[in-house]
Image (cartoon, rainbow, N blue to C red):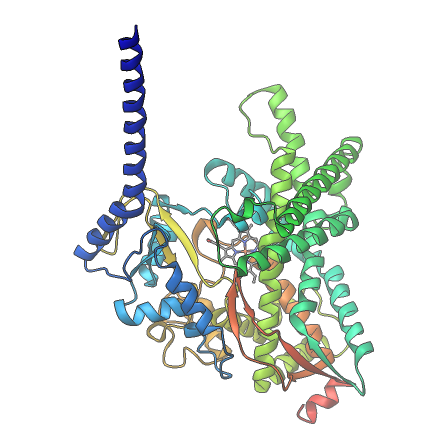
Amino acid sequence: MEEEGFFSHRLKLMVISLLVMVLLYKVLNMLWWRPRKIEQYFRKQGIKGPPYIFLIGNAKEIVSLMLKASSQPMPLSHNILPRVLSFYHHWRKIYGATFLMWFGATVRLTVSDPDLIREIFTSKSEFYEKNESHPLIKQLEGDGLLTLQGNKWAHHRKIITPIFHMENLKLLIPVAANSVSDMLDKWVAMSDSGEVEIEVSEWFQILTEDIITRTVFGSSYKDGKVIFQLQAQLMALTSEAFQKVFIPGYRLLPTRRNMKSWKLNKEVKKSLVNLIERRRRENCCNKTQDQVGGPKDLLGLMIRESWKEMEMDSNSSPSAKIMTVHDMVEECKTFFFAGEQTTSNLMTWATVLLAMHPKWQVLAREEVLQMCGARDVPSKDDIPKLKTLSMILNETLRLYPPIVATIRRAKADVELGGCKIPCGTELLIPILAVHHDQAIWGNDANEFNPARFSDGVARSANHRVAWIPFGLGIRTCIGQSLAILQAKLTLAIMLQRFSFTLAPHYQHAPTVLMLLYPQHGAPIIFRRLVDPMIDEDQGF
Ligand code: HEM
């Protein structure tokens, strides 16, 4: 008996030791042997990069390069790549444009050749997928269009697309113009002797919050506004956390900030569920309610679709896809995340650029005055005719794209530009670097020259895949027409009422924290144009 117990004890010990050894092998393989093997695999193909460091990869060097670059403002130049993507700029000089780098034990290959970018996003897109976001961002972005994959993504995209049809967006113009006018009236009220200094990035954020809220909630705008104000607080808290050095698992600890975030997150979800349930009940009593008048909104479309799907489901196929309340909640969060700060950043940089380049400001104002006069807000028919403004926005998105890079992951072993890429490799596409590449845009790649877009985007550079601020292929930005419409409307009304210059204490410091933003704000001096027709003639 005793002998039997002794053997079973030894057996247990052996099994435990074996399990520990297997675990150790797996950990070492993941954190050491596999990265080394991948490094060698790429080196044999002529692709090098900064060496992998156990566990952290190149994170320490990336953080230190980024901190050094953002420690001081830069001259008033648009050569912002060395400051904004300092690690990319640094290693590209050493290893060439295609190099390997490590985020922890995850390998990333940089790809900036437009032919290869086209392959990844369009001709061979079935071999690539979106990667998982940073855990902090994951809780903000919602499990909606941005992150969904496969059939569920295609189903949601089909339901949501009608919101962004031009005919629908045009219906938003009167309310959007009212919001812009209200904002500018406040600036006038704040101005002493016709002049006022405005931190535009803050004001534009409030403005875009408003239009996104209308796009998402439509007739439930007021309730939606309260919810999105909470979501905005959550986003500010996450930005703060994002600036701290990332410690794995830290976000799970009950710190004061984490607890506040959890509470806000819960409140947002609960309020969205309540709002959706209420609207469903209303629609149930009057299913046509959302169809009369007003633009289509995200919530209305999703609820209507879920009714249709439920009817279909009860009649026929039990496998029909149904959009659940949870799906709707996640899509609302996604829209706020994807649409709010991106658009306000575009408007901020466009205003800064027009303040830096008065010649283009005058040209843009002349066009607005010619199309709509000095007082009338631009109508749905005027907006497409504002060609100079379109060129200015395209050039702004080229030089200062709100999203400076994107990532795809190889779903299988693939070949790209003659290079063999193992399954799981992440590809980093530095949109900002493509947009500033002299080989693509010519010697004036770092100059502000909207005229390069005078014959349209397709002819602005020597490659058709050179301008990609909204991404490319089937996962291209669904909200781009809304963003451009809002930016055009806002700038047009602003140009009608004010001339503007950089505040003397403006510091040029583009930096990236999720999106590209002005590190020290964007203070602009606005001067009221009493009669823009006359002021224009006098050369303002
Ligand atoms: C200037 C403003 C904007 C910029 C620069 C921008 C940029 C982008 C980019 C680069 C992508 C593709 C990301 C990738 O492929 O990895 C994207 C996707 C997306 N954007 Fe935008 N965006 C803007 C405004 C908006 C607005 C206003 C909305 C919504 C109201 C929006 C909603 C989305 C959504 C839902 C996706 C995911 C589409 C999909 O995968 O099907 N964006 N955006």
